Length: 237
Ligand SMILES: *Cc1c(COP(=O)(O)O)cnc(C)c1O
Image (tube, rainbow, N blue to C red; front, side):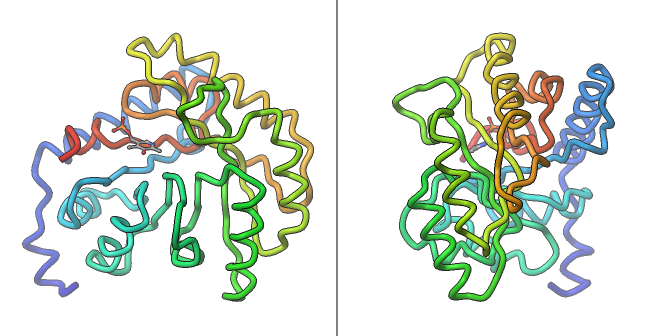
C-alpha cells in the first residue's frame, strides 16, 4: 500500500471509539481479576467485513485480526497486504494446506486427524505452525471442538507432530445472553489447561475464550486471547 493510500485512510470515529472503549473494558476486567492487562490480547474479528475495515482498524492502532473462514480470509489478507497479524479462528474444512504458514495461530484444531494432516502439510512446507486445541467444554452436539475427554488423545497426536506447536486451548461456549451463565465454561477450560499433561511442543500459554457478549467474564477466568467482532465492527454484514 502506498503512503498516500494510508494517509487518506482515516478510520471512522465510531471505530476508533469502539476500539478505545473495548480496550478500556479489557483493562478493567483484567485489573478486577488481579491480572496484568498486557497479558490479554484483542483479536479483532473481521469476518463478513471488507479489507477496508481491516485497514481502518490498523490505522486506529489494531494489529491482530481473526477470520473464521479460509476462503474469505486469504483474499482479504492479500488485499490488505503486509502489516497486520492474522489468526484463523474457525473450523478448517477443505484446503488445509493453504492455511499452513499463513496464520500466526490456528485456534480451531479439534481432532487427531486434523493434527496429523496439519503436521504433514507443515512438514512438506518445511515450516512450524502454531495452533490451539479447541475443546467443546459444554458438550453441545452442534458445536465444533473436541470433548475434554479426548484431550489426552490430542496431546498424544501432538507428540508425534514436531512441526506443530500447541500454545494452549480455545473454546466457543453455547450462546447465552447472561455471561455469568457462561463463566463455568471458561473456568472449566482454564482448569483443563492447568491440568493437561502434554509433550514438549504443548505450551500452557494461551486461553482463547470470550467474544463480544462475554469477554470480560472470560478475562476474569484467565483468557489471554479475546475474539471480538460485533463489539468493534457492528453487526455482521
Ligand atoms: C465470529 C466469531 C467471533 C466474534 O464474535 P462476536 O460475537 O461478533 O464478537 C469469535 N470467535 C469465533 C470463532 C467467531 O467465529
